[in-house]
Image (cartoon, rainbow, N blue to C red; front, side, top):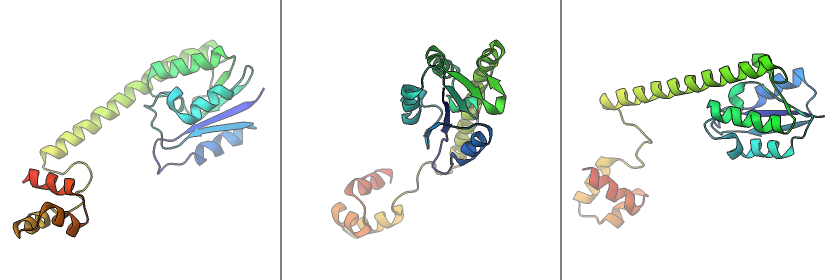
Length: 184
């Protein structure tokens, strides 16, 4: 009967080390699995570390994780992941919520909390979309910065340089030059 830890962070700028430290102070962990720079919106079974943990974990093992959203962000995925683990005879402990799924109260809390997490994620996405719409309405550029200055392309093309020579001069592809011209 092993203690298995699962960690997940959404971006490259984040680290699993805080989660690892938190769990290692509470448990003597036998095996660790993680997914780094993987959004919670990616289904558990589609995450490399989570899938590896699912194929390793055995009856009688305990999975510990710091928060419910490590298992998934929408309630259906969370419930499916929990059901998969419980079908294998695995207990699940979510430390920050103080939930042990070996109890009926723990299962009820997880059901409610996963729905709350899903609602919170949806609200966050709505706020982000509203911010993007506002920025666009204010004339702010969205997306990555252009790889070349539009005015420089215009100048070189006006001076008679071909698309290929303009691209070569600016160190970009001919497709980039064509896109810049199309915006004019």
